[in-house]
Length: 296
Image 1: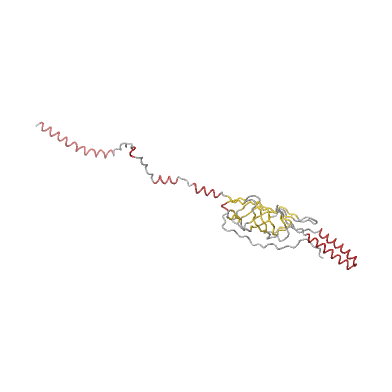
Image 2: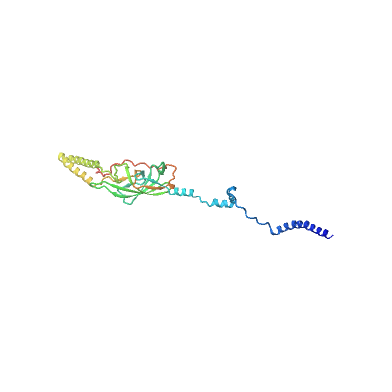
């Protein structure tokens, strides 16, 4: 009887213990939370290289914006500082807007020109027609009464392009001046007036002939000789006491500006798409000799 009771108790313990544990373990896990995972085993060489974690969208955006775009700004800066050279010796055709004469011009007086033809560098218009050129008179010498011709010297200092871009200009006049008279120009840009020797000879001949005619009417042949001498003297005095022709550049005169030093133009300021257009100015008319004549 005693053995039977102890046997029954032992069987009850063995039956109830698993049942109690099955309820106790879930309750314990809810109170303490999930157990931390154990250390992972190192990857073996056979498993291949470890996979890198893919970046999050925020990390990708930050890495994209952190890279500076230096190439476009660098090229824009280079273009902004690019310069175009107009070489020494370049001829720029000009037309004069204000008349100049040794009769009234003084050193320092302004002169105003306009370009007649576009200047191209590497098939690109850099100085359009219609650009303005300013300068000043540096020398003005009137012709002498006995000898010496009228002389003008002009210096070109500034050029203003149609877009108001201003450039320092170091140039002097060159070529053959289209003045309508007998002016000439040397290599230094000095403009010299005509000597008018033909007019001098004509003046003396006219006064000699007139004097001979008057003397012949009054006293025959002897009077003609005396009159001729008097007329010749009068003609010579007229030549000696009158000036030669003034050196002049009338409005509409044409000449060239010759570049003495290279001109450097900012490339971003000479973006011209047309050759430009100059003002229409009539050329100066042909002028008669200026020397004063005795009125007979």
